[in-house]
Image 1 (cartoon, rainbow over the protein chains, first blue to last red):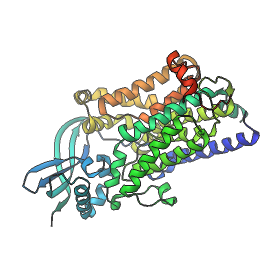
Image 2 (tube, each protein chain N blue to C red):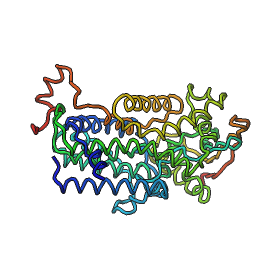
Image 3 (cartoon, each protein chain N blue to C red):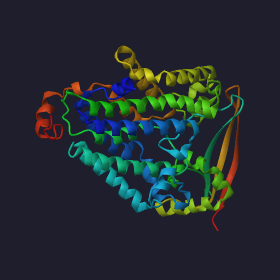
Length: 142
Length: 285
């Protein structure tokens, strides 16, 4: 059985975590992990809006157009998307990622150009009716 | 207040904590090496892409380097395997919590935060608060009861508060949007993609998700309602995985806290081995 002190300590810790979690849901954001809001899929996509997805395309040193997996840069797609604005403002980040990719995977085909693209499916009453790709950042081998 | 306290400290057999230790600690190598193996990929990501979370900024934790990430990966797995043996449950449990928490900060500090870990982190935090226990110990204990209740409440909070995150970020009419269409377009499997041609079904499912999340406290009820809700949770996660390949595995593991594991009996063959082996550590009653 727990001592009175053991109970009080556990009760206090419980109250603190519950309070932080509720505050996180009401006012916090992802930055407050692990007590931030449980917000996966919490934003609303308009039925007449668009669905965005980031993708990376590149041109190999011998001129072939290729679609590059995001994992080959060590990031998940959602992580690229989470930092899309940063990379758009500072495309040199794309170059830093390419260098790191080549260091981590020396056997991979060298690239002379990499484009981070924001693709959009256009929706009409919840059905897809169009698809557009817009480059967000471009890196070219100097 | 005393009713709430009585409920939160309602004794359960210590064997449940012993089982949860074995199963959750053994799950960590699966999680780290297999089901969320993308975390270690952060080892090769340039530090300019590192966006430390609030807690990571508070702690004296260096910017993750390749060596640090790979070293931590090994440390988490080894510590979890040793802890799964049931030895030194308080000390090793605390070490596992600290290492895994650090692992999660590395996982979530590169531009995307998942919310599938809350209950698992709570479980790792509370398991070390219970003294050594045998798997078959059915003697009710309020310390074990508190730990189990914390895990259960964290599971419920993950669903219940997710509904409020949808109201806050998506609006009260979140369910009338096309969020599932987005999910399927982005991640649809061969089972999920055909749903794009049935938008009304995706629309209806969104209402179902909100209802399910708001009804999640029913998990805490005993009897058929509680059991039915656990089954519904499992179905929800399996269908989500089958259609958009998202599964909250660490969270699903925590659903085990709703089962009376202390009454579980190993097959005779395993039981004989476990007398000398890991399953019956430290003869504390």
